[in-house]
Picture (cartoon, rainbow, N blue to C red):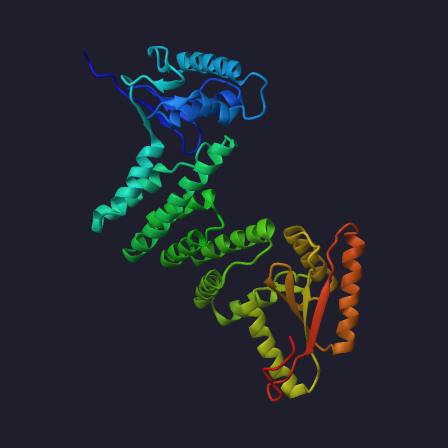
Length: 395
């Protein structure tokens, strides 16, 4: 008797299947629950699946007659399988109290190939280690069953994603060490689509572009990443990302004539809002201001503005950031300290004027967002000049 060839299913990304030696495709149209039920059976194809388990997964406290609902579901799934594999019979078999896949028709899953490559890669070193890491990364075409929002699928999605990110973190420095920058860019491009907030992707992407002599593109990637981080999470890139950005900017300016540098510094429209920056850049601005104060004996003031416990973390944080940028003067520097807290500097303002500004910000916030329960608080301190510096400033 000829050995029957396996059926292949892709679960990473878009759910699809392949017939032996034939081109595969996406399943025929079916309800979300029917597809989820079929996918659950596929994922667990190596064991018997009891009726109680299936009822618990798909009809827990939601059906007056779960046993009958299960029978109807199995009937629908069998019809779906016949449409997908018209040459195959009895793919799903019924045994007393459980369901099993026909043992004569093996199933192969991309998730199993992916997991095997990940596990094997951890056992060996050298070039074979790198080969298996690259194989694992290439098999990950997208998040596990990306269209399935069932609880059982979400758990596995997190597991496979964590594996994938581990493989990327492991292979990227190895490729960078060998200066295989095109491969680095390919992996980072795919990884960015999976989880853009994983900083390794933007870091190695920028490193690769800089190494390939394309600092302008590195700056573009950074700016897109920075904007997305602000939009999605309300936070700025980490310092190591900022350092690469500074390097890329420096490389762009390196080959420029002095007149071109001066022209570039003076061109472009000014942003009329306050200057939002990272805490590291904010520290440098404050250091320059302290030198300025030492010469002029003028006054500048620092302030920390915070949201109280009643605030909705991300929503009210974005709201406060908007109010700060629009209420402060052009060029006043603002940086994020932590979730719901910002530090800013008012140049030429004493403590009394700063309190007035803080009161104006508080009023502007609650006028714009009347239903917010955020309780804005602030702490201020006069900025000392270099000569008067003290580590006991009550910030």
